[in-house]
View 1: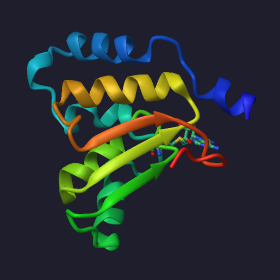
View 2 (view 1 turned 45 degrees about the vertical axis):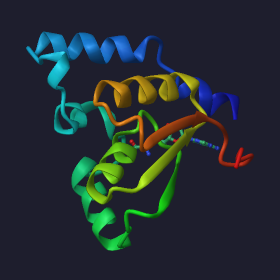
View 3 (view 1 turned 120 degrees about the vertical axis):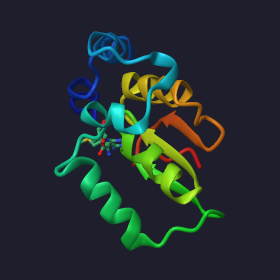
View 4 (view 1 turned 90 degrees about the horizontal axis):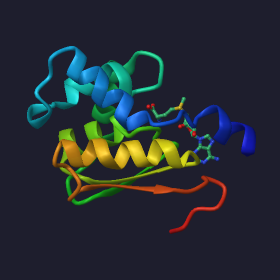
Length: 125
Ligand SMILES: C[S@@+](CC[C@H](N)C(=O)[O-])C[C@H]1O[C@@H](n2cnc3c(N)ncnc32)[C@H](O)[C@@H]1O
């Protein structure tokens, strides 16, 4: 488990993302899901695949979804935004969870999107 944690734990990730947003001229009080998309979805086909999966799953707003291995939470936020569901993301990497939490607050989505550092093999729920 340690090697996975080490691989997925870049230092100071949130501040690096913020610096990147500033560099491309984004107003931090108006950051959108789409602004973050180039850096917050670590899977093949990015948000296109996320949107397709959300459609296929037929989520309804009263559901509470668990996103296991959520990374910095791009799909977690997208899922909540598209469906109205509460979504909890968990990831082994506390650095990712810290960035996920701060990015979610930056977007004002913290009411319905929460994160915990945890392993899929030892869920805290
Ligand atoms: C390829 S990334 C995908 C992240 C995210 N789902 C996305 O699409 O943007 C895989 C993630 O799974 C996490 N992970 C790997 N093993 C895990 C485990 N046992 N429990 C929780 N998270 C795990 C890693 O830390 C990493 O953030």
